[in-house]
Length: 152
Image (cartoon, rainbow, N blue to C red; front, side, top):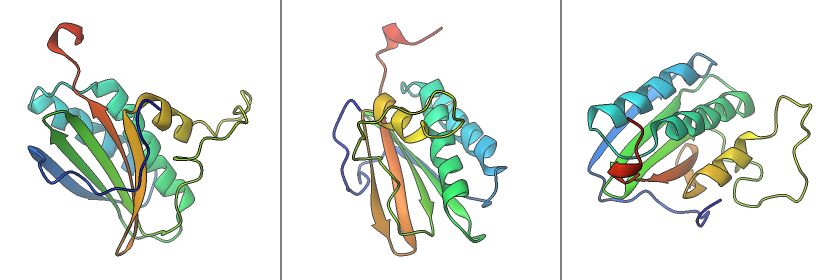
């Protein structure tokens, strides 16, 4: 991870934000990716869209796979002057595995699972989780990419 992983609240100075309830199913993953891609593109925001989509997909897939019940998952996308923050809310209060406490064991290269939290820690500028009234929110932040470094 490139920055601190903390239990903290989202920034109150967001310049734009989206909040959407998603079904508690695998169908939520492509919808979440599309929302993040559209949000970043519509405002010509400078955060890395591909990384934002990938990490959002990981958070939503984890929420679907590791929580029970059929309560909706909520996706919150905030575009900040310094980057973007994406949160995924679910009804399970249990913190996500090793999001903020990396393990010394390398993921098994032959297994399909076990790399999502590693990707989030590694590719985000910061990440974390916090309790909510109805469960928890897991989040990551990406910095704005300078215009000269953005893909054309």
